[in-house]
Image (cartoon, rainbow, N blue to C red; front, top):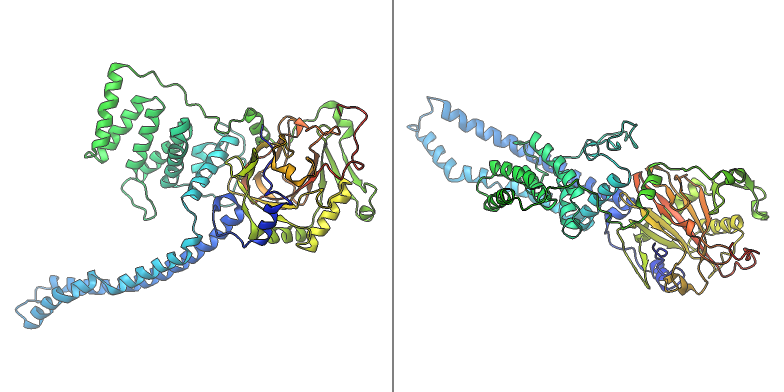
Length: 545
């Protein structure tokens, strides 16, 4: 089990620098949907450049067609003889200057240079190789957590593998992946993971799909493709070889040589595979098993909760669960009580509906947007990026805007806790990325070396997580040990106690942010610490409580 997520030292130097330093340069597009949406603007500018290029090239090609038709007509006209000195002159002139001008067209070069200049203008904004790999890993994550069919995903359908139930998500516009798209996902699996952990489970599934699509379109050419059937066959054969399926690796390599018979490397592989099969020194390949790259002991429970949000409470809890209007003894809530839904008693989890307005949510997202940076996690005494947390975050002081100050007052009224510095951290605003998630973790520190204790205000006693947006599918908050999950409810706030009254961490608060299957998930987190709450949440009579 992991310690609490990283804070940017919350009220310390890290958060202050985040608030004062200039916004970061575009990077890690895949880790926040806001960045992905901004990338649409860059592509829009490229589209306008390409439209201008196509327009100018179309004019040039029409003129080129007229030149062709004029010369072709001369060649087909039996009366057009070079005995005519004028025709002889025009022939010599065409061959000396007209044809070089046509072939080495200045106009064509200028059109291409304009297109290149357009690319240069947005080059700093474009996603890099890390983004492509991150996007590919996101698709594999969605495939795993939601048990999706690779063939279905390639066809634009989010259907569970082998299931006859309705798709988990039905987009209004269905978009299929190309052979080149599938190849890049499979290649990412082999190049980024496989050499270390043997992840051929993913590479084989995606490369099989790529090979199938390339076979269907063999002979046609797409200007945007960087891979080919031969590339896909080569990588797939390697994956099967590493997975122990020598006969299939041999079959694919032989098919490769049908298209590229001069490739000596693949020819040597064929000889090697044949010898291995003849000697029988290779054990038969077993079924492909998905690697537990996340190292989660609770992976199955986590994924089940992500696939089926909700969960049945224990019978003894049922009488205590329900909905109510709450003032919590606060004058702030007298005219507009909080709409409270008790989700669970142990651990104590409550959902406050309509906790924030649409306008307030948009204001908070707008304030945080320019300052978003890749979220980090605690690793011992340090903080670092991690594959198990894909999002960007920013910290907002209550002085950032009256909306933030009003929200802090509302949280204090509903929870009855003291949020004055240093008893609570700044408001953390998070935007999840492509397939964005946060694997099972505790919000409270599980080690005294955690950066949380730099605040000198104790451990995190409670969490308030506000859903600033809706999502189309996925993104639930799953409580693993307690065996329930809460779907995203726009403008609602989820509250839970991280610590028991005796100060010990509550093991039942192990929770996760399920991958966002479709949509743009924004949340705001308010973490409240122990110090300052001694008389607001006193110890109980029972030491175990």
